[in-house]
Every structure is written in structure tokens, then in C-alpha cells.
Amino acid sequence: MTSQATTLAFVESPVQLLNVLEWAHAEALRGPADRPAAAPLLTGVPAQRGARPPALPGLLIVVLPPLDPMSRGQLRRMAALARDEGHEVRWQEARGSGTAPLKALAALAREVRDAERVVVGDPFSRYVQLLLTLVRAERLVVVDDGTATMEFVSQLARGERLVRWHRAGTRGLSRRGRELAYAPVSAAARRRFTPRPGHRVEVFSSMPVTVPDGVRLTVNDFAWTRAAFGPPRIGRGTDLVGTSLVETGVVDADRYRAAVRALTAEHGAGRYFAHRRESQTKLHALAEATGLEIVRPDLPLELVARRGPVGRTIVSFPSTVVHTLPYALRGTGVTVAVVDVDPQWLTGTASPRARHFLADVTGTARDVRRFATIGPPPPAAAPAG
Image (tube, rainbow, N blue to C red; front, side, top):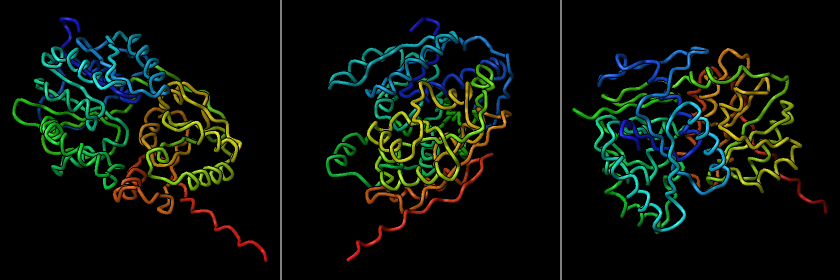
């Protein structure tokens, strides 16, 4: 970390890194005199095509990469974009062995303690929560890690412990034991996300959230993305956006495949943009069942869509993109549409919160079309005889 660096950002996914770039762009456009004080305020920074401010002074972005190859590949390309924007980026391995987290913590300890401002992309991350025990910064910023921000803000407002929505209610004995052991760290992290005199908290988000008293909310309207890329070339067809709800154990794989097949037939879709966590086995089955062209994006979908080419209509299940793509594609004429998840698609191990959370993701989306929910396929006919 350079001696001038005063802001430390931790990211663990490509979307988090994108949103740190959006936040840095918004901060640079505001300028030192306009940067926020402690009072809560809702602000949006308008896109200014061609108005590309210099890199935010004193920002170091620390990438804590996951192990899966798709995420790592996207993160490396996002890191290259960040460097092109003039930001300092450090790649810090923190996984892969039992000692890796402790080694990374030791490598970052001094910088974490000295930072005047800390930006995090995943408040639920155990590693980030561990790092927060060292933070002395007066200002803490949370940027989006997708729709999880909605649950984070709700739990913060209710004073609840921080737990991902799709994991609630599904913990086995071993996981509960680990969580009990980790509880003091999690509780300390939640206190760091609570504003108090001398400690300011900001949420920088595209999600429809209402922050607790004392927390500043700044709207992320993807001004950097719109200034840096596009407008895209737009085709006549429809693109589908994949989801990792099957991989997280929320939605049944067969039900999901049947829904994608029905959407493809109804809307004449030609391409399927895969989520980076979707398994190759699942994607192969989708291609066989639907004839869709499966696309593995090399960057977050907001950037891929903005660069184009993209279909005139983009259809998604409840997902982060139903909130972010209308911002990224503003003024292009592309329609973003969302399809609800039928409750009968949910698995027996899905958390009790899943149904309501997914409905909330859909119901609060702005500037999107809503398509009717696709029900479950009819039962197979009984064999003759």
C-alpha cells in the first residue's frame, strides 16, 4: 500500500469490484468539497458521457479471490479495467489452505489499521468480518454484492445477526457449531456496520433499500459503466439471464430446466447468459433441452450488455440484474423483463425466507416488464395397461 493510500476496498467477486469502480467514479465526480457528511442523504450521481474524472486519490483495491475458475477469470479482467482507470489493485490470496486466511490477515493488518476509510463488497463474508476487527477507520462504505444488500440492510435495521438469506434455516449441526464459535466475530462486525458519533456508515447501492437512521444511502446508477462503454448494438431477439438458484439449493433443477424451456419457446430466446456459478453439467442439459446458445460472460453482465451486442429484450428470473440493468442500459431502448419463481420450484431444503425474499426482489424492481409466472409442468401420464 502506498503512503498516500487512505481508502482500502475489499472485493471478492467481479460484481463487487465493478461497484467499487462505480463508487470511486461517484466520489471523484462529487469532489472533496461535496463529499458526504454524517447526515443521512439520498443522492444519485448523473451519468456524464465523456466526463471521466481522474482516479480517486488514495484508493487501494484488494482482491480476495475465490477458488472457482470462472470468478477468478472475471476478477482478473475487472482488475485490469480498474488499473486502466488508474487505480492501484492488489491480488491477495486468502483461500486454498488452512493457513491462507491467517497469512493474508497478517499481510494486510497494518494497512487495515491505518486506513481512514474502508469499502467492503460483502458484509456477510467471514473473511471481511474478520478483517473488520482490525478496522479503525472513521468511515465504512458497503457497496452492492447483488440482492444480498437488501437482506443486509434489513438485518441491520432489525438488529439481527448477519446471515445470508438462502442459508437461514438450513444449517446442520456442524455448521451451527462453527457459527457459534464464530459468533463473537460476527457480532463485532455488525457493530462496525452501525453508525455512531465519529463512525460513519454509507451504503452505495442500486437495490431498493431503506437504510437505518444514521446510515447514508447513495444510489449507484452505473454512471461509470455508461460513460465508459456503449451504447450497444441491439438485435431483434430475446436474451435470457441465468441464475445460480439451483446451485445454492433454492430451486429444483428439473423445475428450472422446464421453466427455461418454456421461456425459450414463448419468447423466441436465442441466447442464455450463464451466471458464473452455474455448473457445466446444468448448462449442458439446458442447451440440450432448449437449443439455446450458452454464453459464459467474461465480465459482469452490466458491462457485457452495455458493450453489446444485446437482445432487444432481456428476460431474467429474480436476480440482481433486474435492478442493475435498467440503470446500465438507460436510454438504449432495451427492455428488461422479470419472471417470478413459482413456489413449487423451491426445494425441500430452501430456507423459509426464500419465497418471500425472491418475491421482494421481483416486486421492488423498477423500470422492468413483468411476465407471468411459469407454473410447474403437468404430471406425466400414467402408462397404458
